[in-house]
Image (tube, rainbow, N blue to C red; front, side):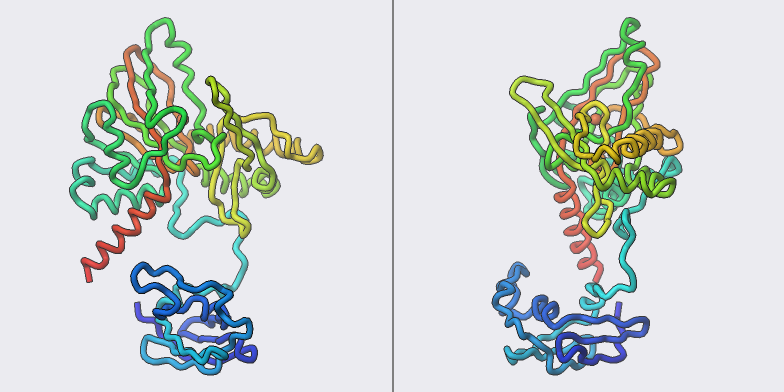
Length: 384
Ligand code: FE2
């Protein structure tokens, strides 16, 4: 997209510039511009990494001239006596002079929160297609990134086949449960009542720090009726909680819960994190919710603990609300992937006898997003 810049002027005695485009005003600081120069002495032309540290930029850096030249802006810095050229589209894409502070709990532009109405447009693809076609892989990964989960159908049926799903975008996160873990269920008349209970939707392993950010579950045997999988968007839960009562949202995002797992010899995993995690500027980045591994919460002041529990209870009710869930059945060779920092998952109740065998493993969203971004660059370059 061509950016139409109308005027540029030096402000604050050379400590910044003001650019006016056809829609708005953008101010940039001299030190910010100098730090983000893309000349060969500042950035490696090979890998794009910065070659200088801030200490190499004079503290009294200021701008003495700024001029447009087509799609570029030439800026002259003193005391270095150096002219740097900026691409105007890059400047526009990296503007930070925004009209207002974001609200607590904002989500990134490339995230779309959802409820049960997503059922008709679950991000899903065929294993063979995404294995052979980079555009199809990109589209599927985009869906996983945007909605926090996705389904993959028609995969191979053999032990360890889930690793082929991980290979599409990243690397396995090995834990004390191994490279992968077994979820085997045999439903017979004596234990049907027990397994009929299902599980509350949760995020996995909240007691780890860092938490595994991707979980994959892969179906290798499925003869029991019921036992469907379901997912709930934890970000939508957080948004609903905030809409109902800002104090509930604030207490769960301001104070740390605790999580613990010490269920096997030689393992004692603990973490101290909020159930709703925000960045310092309020971006919603993670939800941790798991009744089975919640430890005693001790980092909430006495005066706030009742409010905390009211909020925690309501959050659980929202997680359990059928209007929030998307459910599906995994058949042989089918798998699903969840962003474990956002989307909760559960198994629903069984309604008949038989066997069900799933294999699960963990991986990470940073690798998935990296693969997605690289595929985006690759496919957009091919289109040019
Ligand atoms: Fe789980």
